[in-house]
Image (cartoon, rainbow, N blue to C red):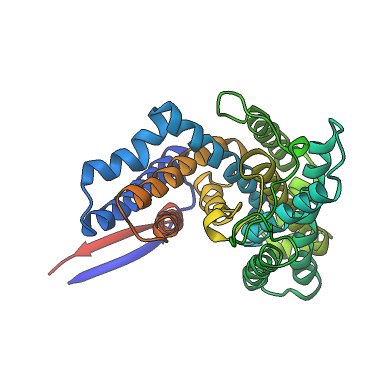
Length: 356
């Protein structure tokens, strides 16, 4: 006789959580590695290019940091709605709209040689992301529309808007037929130091401090946590769901717009189609980073660094080993599924009985 029972865990130690999450991440990474090997890649070469080299080689580490910063900033924004029980997947579209607003500002104020030009572009991009985040916030708060569907559709709307601009009014006549915009003015470009954008890194760390304070020590943070733990009790206590939904999704969108603006003015310098896209799919990777960090702001720092290394390594594998175009997306999906599965084993335990 075989009997399987699923029993609820009422007390979960930090050690158990850390162990389960570590194992789930290793399982997800191992599954992806095996997938690569099935394509004919060498096991050691996959591990080396995917995880070791992006963290140990200085030139590769520079690229890892470049990816980690926007991933981390968007992860911080996603923590707010996720903690409130709102599952937004719209960071990618909000990032794209932030890029558009920042680029429009740079092109419109091309003669501005002020030291504040970079600040103006960043504020414009942040505002663009905020506006894009308000749309699902209003629909969720007023009509309880499914935020997953809305944010997903808005991502594709943002893609289409970007395509319209780069194939249409913003297309550069000097791009030799390629759908690229003119480079943004040099006065709007952010300098780097030895290949690393220190200003972006400082912004990321400061935002981590701010987000931790907001969640742990403010009234808004308490209201967000209340809705995430027990929506009925939070509503009965008089906490406005409209307020929570609007603020969570607006702030999340603002940070995604800021991340896109930083990518534009520090890294890419112009808009282009998918192959040259400023967003690079990092909005989806930020979802994995936020859950890997257990929705804790301080934990976003290492999780973003790790995901930045994996994105860097995944792109290297695609280029050097000739892997499929969507290999990074496949990797993100496998790791995310592993992390979500970990939630089950944290909250429940399996009891197996074998008898005669």
